[in-house]
Image 1 (cartoon, one colour):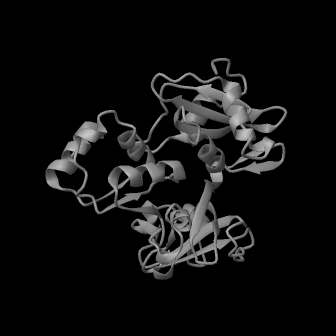
Image 2 (spheres, rainbow, N blue to C red):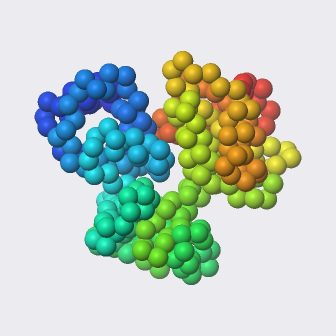
Image 3 (cartoon, rainbow, N blue to C red):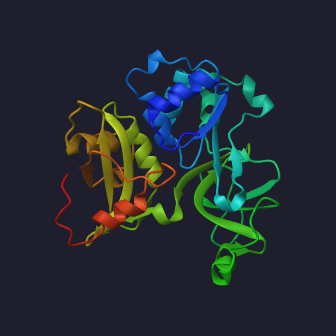
Length: 295
């Protein structure tokens, strides 16, 4: 057991023990594949690397597959679901499609796990179209899903309706049944009356060659309601201006989705499990009168 996630210790452990399978959050995988001296370690024992806990940008997933040279599977779940709800394991007939299409399915959130019933629904509870475009909320039920929260009747009634657990995760679903999470409902940014999904913006910013990590949140703004704000950690030795990041996004997405503010930080706050804490970013920078924000 490793008490703390220290990249060198993890790499030594994989090599020494001949580890064949692991599941890490994207920030951990990013730290591994960005580590200088990675080539010194023998990682050939790995059979499959799973990523979970947060959406994984395709660029990072591709790099993980290059480094570990093994199967890559995206997973999704919650403490309330014991934990898996989906895995992006390819269906048999999808293993023969062109590599680019296989990669697209591998990097989706995945299809429902064994024993789980999953739907993506609109506000009225009806199922969204299976077109990979219409966004709804993921709801699930099954023997592995909790029947409720101990001692919290109101929270249970709000979260579990007609036997379905409402996850709070917004997603699309395609004709093959593969889900793609676009955001947490609480993380969706509403700017100028338009919905902006933070993961979509983050995925584009991750494509910038100088960016190591990024998190997008909506901060209060008198004009726009919420202002799309990108917190960016640059790779060691890199220098980038705010305008370059904004232009980079505008070239690839609708202009209203581009950050109106880019804040360069040395690191992003993390939870105990290593996930980026957007709640902490909103807490620190979210006051309208906050003069401490420096881009």
